Image (cartoon, rainbow, N blue to C red; front, top):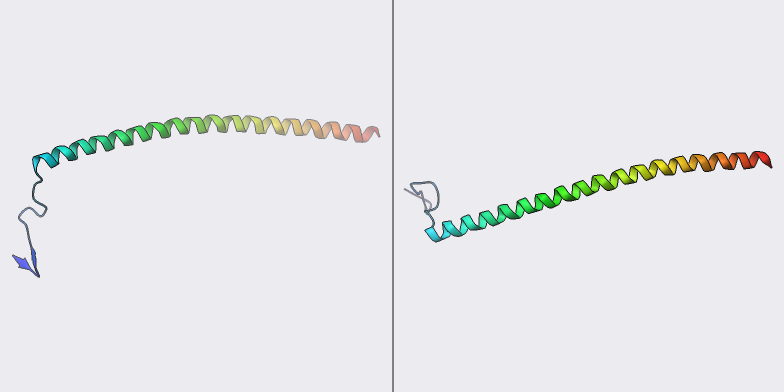
Length: 82
């Protein structure tokens, strides 16, 4: 059935690709899946490192706050002595 120059195929899609194209597509899909898996593994490693570094930053921030309180107390004691 023709409609403005378009023909409706019986399967509503493109014709079946040649066997060689199917094999190439399957190989390419496998390569893409391997690349995705590798990228996911890399992201997991980076996320683990980010959490580790964030824990270090939190610890250092806490230590800095403690040191600042100590410095403030020493400064006030020195000011009272003068």
